[in-house]
Amino acid sequence: MSPKPEETKPMVQPLTYKCLREAVQGTAMAFRAVTDLDPAGGEGDKVFPPTYQGGVYARETRMIDGKPVDCVLLDSVQSQANRLELALLEWHRQSEKDRKPFPLVQIDFAESEAKDVGLFSALEAPHRIADAVFLASEIEIEGKKVAFRHPKDINKSSAGGRLIDEASSANATGLFGLCPTALIFGMWDSHGARGGLGEKFQRALVSEIFGVGATKDNRRPASRVDQLLVVAGESLPIKENADGTWSPVEKGAGNAKLANVGLGNVTPSLKVPPKSRKPGEDEYNHGGVTIEYARQITVLSLPALRRLRFPIKDSEADQEKANVEARTVLAALALSSVARQWASGFSLRSRCDLVPKGELVFALLKPGSEEPFTLAPKDAPRLLAEAVEAAKGCKLPWPTTEADAPWKSGCLTLKPANELAKAVALSRRLAAEDRD
Picture (spheres, rainbow, N blue to C red):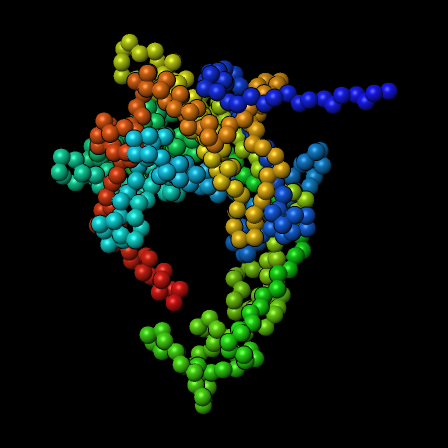
């Protein structure tokens, strides 16, 4: 008997603008990507989760294959959002000045007291474009500096700042052309003129990574062997001076220990010294965990995008078409962020490097069915460009060309107010002193 021919898996089609638009316009629920990952060191290698208050890991039980499984959080929703945003920022920075993929608002600290900050964008701010740093920034209009956003009086805000003040789910057009990523990753305008009543935009894109089958008791030894200062413990006395310099003391006790200046030996131990232990922290060093595998789950909610409306000030405009095209742009930008972050690797922190077991595949979830698609990083620019072209045809704003003054090279660049620059410079100076 001849062996049965192996079943060939159907080809997974690349995601096109047409497919994406149909998904956004139709009744599909979401795009979902589930990626299983192994520790870079292989089976049995430790990975180190993030620690939370009290020095603990975020352990939880999840249902996997119908059974409760011990898991540990490796990268939270907030952390994943930051990584996705930084992937978009890198894309924007690397693109040619006349081919920026999306509009970006940034603050230039170069000529301020905090010049070492350089450029700081809405993709880096904790509250995105609604962050308080943009309330303390200025824009130059006709040679005069005005507040980008006024914290109390909307009428004193610049035209760009008012777009944030006026934004809502029913009127997201201005925010679409100012900071579209805020509509993807979520935003709460809690610091503006409306205070706690400011508009909230839910996250449309959510991602997290967790370890499956996590062990509970691991130990990490702490030690240091100083090859130059070969002394037991900290028996070499030193004198530490007020200016940070120090010198060895041949006779007498001295006034400091070698550890104060980062030298000397540390006796190997599994325990955290009581004086170094944080409140509520376990006495043992956090030794990481071993896991069966890690899993990343990423979901783009299409109903969340459909709640957004993009009115056009044109009586002849096809309003519903404008809504669909704007939502399609946001979907393309969201999925592109996943593809670009995915391709950059999974180095979450020291000793937490993960390797995907397979390729990135997005499943389009429809009622009762799902359809797989791929999106390679090299194909993301074309997908977004097609969606943007269709949106511009509906007169939706997307200021990424030199003709979109005061935008330049896809950026609206602000300057920090003197008070903000001083506060940033002072905070950095104090942080440096604390480290000393």
